[in-house]
Length: 72
Image (cartoon, rainbow, N blue to C red; front, top):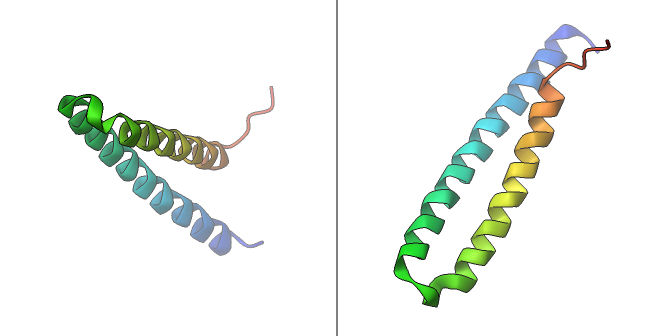
């Protein structure tokens, strides 16, 4: 693989990472707003929290891929 393709892949990962982080923040705000409404929205809050955790896992995987391994 040449360096042009490698940079392109890294750029794609960085864009995806930015999108996932924004979605994570948006879900956090939605969860906070629903929690303020009280018990009626608890099922929705639980669903959003699960989705937020999935995004966090995706973010961590991309960050790991972008961070080079350092062999000690």
